[in-house]
Length: 338
Image (cartoon, rainbow, N blue to C red; front, side, top):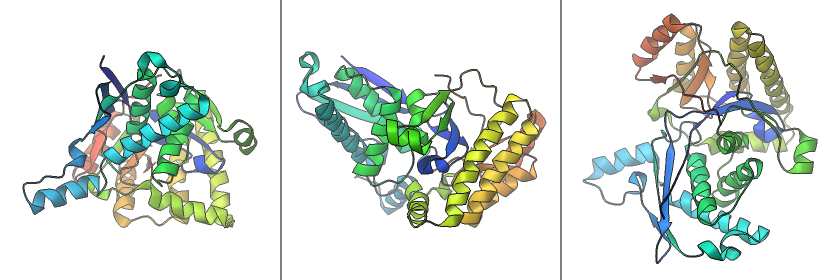
C-alpha cells in the first residue's frame, strides 16, 4: 500500500493579517505549486530527507546557496512535528494508531514541495496538511476540515514556535476559496471560526508575483503584532477591525461586479499594513511597481510575494513586463474549487 497526498499553497486575498485577531479574511488555494507526501508501510518509522534537508554539498558555494533558498531548517522537523501532533490527537480522541488495529504499524514517509519557501504562500502548512492527510488515510482517521485547520496550526504554533493565524490552514483544509469570520464569541464557543466555502464566487482577474530573495519567516511579523495586540496597542486593534471591514467591502464589491471598488480594498489592505508594520524597501517596491501598471497590490502573507487584481490581458502583460524587468515572477493562480 502506497499512499500519496498533496496540499496547495494559499493566497491571502483580503483581510490578512486579522485572522489571528478575531477579524475577517478571504483566502484561496491554487494549484500552480504543491506539497506532496508519499507514505508506505515499513519495518521502522522512517522520515526520508528532501532537497532542503541536504547535509552534503559540493562546496561552500552550494551550502550558502541552499541556506539562502531554504534557511537553516529543512522540512524534516516539520514532518516530525506533524507526526507527533497527529499521535497526540489520536491519543486525546481515542482513534487512529491507538484504536485501529487494521492499520497499526510503522511507515516510511517522504515529502516533496514545489512551493517557493518563505514567501508568505503557506508552504510549511501545506507540507503539514498533506502529511496529516496521509496519516489520516493510513490510520483510517477522519478529521473535519475546521478541526484539521486547528491541528495544523497547533503543529506550527505549539510544536515549532511559528507565529500565524488560522487563515492559511483553513483555506488548505477546505482546499478552496473560503470566507472566514473569526468572531470572538464563536471562536470561544466552538474553537474555530465561521467558514464559508465560496465555490461559485466569480473573482476578478487575479495575479500573484514573487521574488525568492525577499523571503522572510512569517513569525517575524506575527510575533511583533501579537505582542502589540496583547499590550493593548490601540493602533493595532483599530487596524484589525478595519481589515475585517475591508473583507466585507471586498466581497460586496465583487458580488456586484464592481472590480474597481474591489481593487481599492486590496490597495488599502497593504497601505494599512504599512502604517503599523515595518516593510522593507524591496518588498514595498514590488507593490509600487505592480500599481504603476494599473493593477492593485498587497502582500499574500508576510512579504516576498504580492497579490492583486488587474483589469484585462493588456494590463496583465504590462504588469508582467514591469515586474519581470526586476526579476520578479508573475503567475495567474489556478484557484482550487474544493
